[in-house]
Image (cartoon, rainbow, N blue to C red; front, side):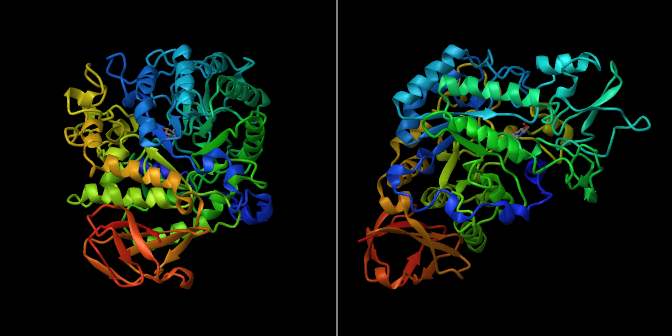
Length: 574
Ligand code: NOJ
């Protein structure tokens, strides 16, 4: 699917520098740091909210900040520690907020700065932190900076964006927008082209101009001063382009937009981003309370990801691992390999695990087999919430929300679906209203929601699942609670078990005397397994603390175990 083009923000120029520029392990956050000294984000559960679709407190058909405030008790009850809100700044909403027209305000349809302050205050009262989305690569074409910039070639803000002459009546080079067609748009008034990695309505800022950095960092201070706990950095690898505008290599085949495939080696993954990231981190570090950077960090491999932590662990604390998120098949060997490389990464970067976000078909659909989807959703939750690392949930994942993709091009809101239809249906399907109740519009709004709700909202909603101890929601709550209270789960070392099994992913988490064994049957057949537990803990009985199938409360983990199809088991050793 073409939205997966977002995932192809790849092909780093110098990924091999990872280990030559990365500092020695001892300058990193050591994994053995005592829990009490560890920054909060290492053991937090993050939760992504798409504000347009989460909760509508005004019956307007779109969500808003007051809606989020009204659901804080729900988030608290779920066990969420930090909420990442996708952009809620003023915006023409061409890319639903990722086209910002004012970095220091709240979109009127979502509320006011006073509403936002109330959100921070009410969230704090519940020990929940708020993370903003920071889009530094581009602004909206309606931002006053761009309006000034395009007004004349001599305007002081002209150089805040990337303007170039064309070549023989054509764009300056062959670069393509990740959202389809040329990355250059001609501006008839000044007869030059401007560059945009995304839509034409999202012109790229020129990060080689120091005034751009100053203006963006002022915006960062604005939100830090208001009490945000950090930022999720949008499209962070795309800040810089080759100043000589070298053509990109053309690859075989065409994408869903009908454009030739391209490597993007000259307009993505420039190492110049690291200076900005270091300065941004320093700015955050000048504030108390361990403010955090979460990165939308696409890369082709682990080495790319390692770079994002910074040479001295001085850049992004939580770079997202899309290689894990997008394995897209229930494969024990694939998950095992990814987890292992991540858990033992050479810079000791703290892992970050997620399966979902607003750009990707929901995991319920990607990993479900169409028959056992609820059970598989619990299996995936078991993995996400029992690994050593910080998990990020996407709203509704905890209910087993599925996609509701547009049926016709007329229904599509997301421009990539309009440009790429029918091969690319866009991202509306994973952005449907949160399912609160079985009432009309899933209790999201009394007005017609901006997107239709999914087909299964009558069963997969907060009200119904809260009452059902076997629901996906109850299972998420249980696992989050275990993470919070169990020392091995919270901070224990990760040891893979039965590392050659093709169907079962099994591992041990250990912290001092506390041990937890997790076993996930990723196949649709029953499996038998004898765990290769380390000698020190064989003979101990396993007390089942979470499972997606009904099983005996305790088991001798030394004996052969019978696993149900798609069964997940979490045993505490006693
Ligand atoms: C990545 C965001 O997640 C996506 O939704 C957006 O369209 C692009 N960046 C452009 O900002």
